[in-house]
Length: 247
Length: 304
Image (cartoon, rainbow over all chains, first blue to last red; front, side, top):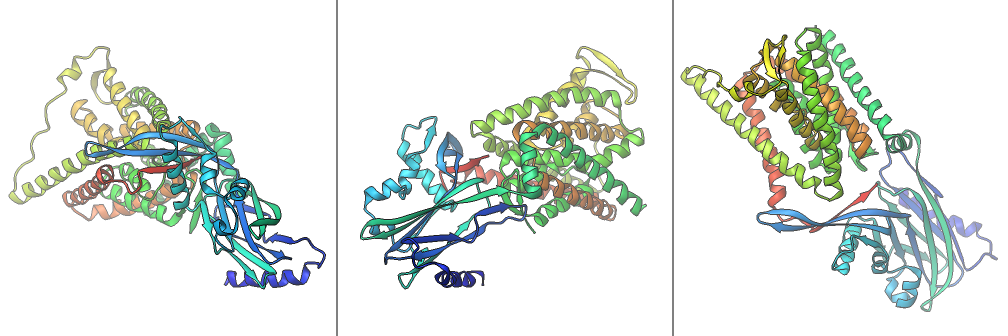
């Protein structure tokens, strides 16, 4: 039902966008995402208006994260971990939605320049210790990212209405890296970028969830002591109450 | 109720975790065996990272064992001298174990080591319990008498630095409880278990402590060992999830109460057989994870 509601937003937008606005006007339904204990993912609606007929690409990129990758191999009857590589310098989330397959609407050089090729994203990461076969690890990195749906390519993810309005829904997973996300929207016509817009979405932990995650990380020893005392107190308190009740 | 776990970094239905606590607490109350050995595998099965499963597994035992330790201490069933010497060993073992876990995790081997340790230990415990309870059931039906306890511990009595343990009425080398404690502390850090399943038989059959003080003393040292390991796992490895630990403690306390009440009305031998089957099943499931070809040769986890 929520999605149907989203469909109305471009219509609303049409009534508020001034005729003198640029070739591409973009808005989102949120400019920040608050991660609470009950956070199980979130849909971000990107919508806007275009003055020229063309195709639209929406790219969301989170701050870089660190990933630990392992490779298993068989030793005797047992599958053991043969190598571990830490990958840094790649976005935790990378989602590209477009109104047509990006390879058909932009030449390779432009795709590369704008960072629209997942293979380039994987190649730009730092793999430590340096593996013997970097390409194998880059491919495995992408396979894992796409499987986990951290990386998404959806070539029918942007809907364009009457060559004037567009909307796209980006599905953010529950396990989100925190920080400032970059949202780039491109209007493409004749294999060229006619206009582009940048937005940021701030993802942060809030409330008790944010406090506890921060506490557990920054003051991990105090957190450990407090939690252990709390668990002992809970066990003791509940135990005494239950014994009295059953006595 | 879906909750996002701040340390395990995953979504989980918190009632599922409470039900794990309830089920394992129930089995534990039913049979008298601690349930720590089943909690960590269950957490791993639902996708909790092994280091967090182990750290949280140890921390939740603090809550589960607090009331028992307190009650035994009040009744004077704790050999304090023995408990403190055990703690010297177990705290050292715990400290080394948590550092070892950190090193193994950094090299990407922790998950495999934990799985391997569980398969060996659960397999051993499960199979020996299975044999024991089947034999006990058969003997009862044929009316055979119980064998006398095995004689042993002669080498234990020859170790140096012998001191008196008046509450247990024993004279022993301090090395024995220190070594025993060390081993148990290591297991707590690497597997998230209390180690009662090792501590109690050794206290009974090797150290020959009186049955009355065995349970109290082992629970007392187990409380403080798991507390130490819980603090170290949180402080050093960021591996104790608060929501998981609280939900498990809540579940296990209620589960233990129900289990103890149900246990009073059921036959011990059959209960142990049920628990043995559960343990063997968990060992087989974990063991299959080592030999079945993985779905994906490359795995990935976000470093937080």
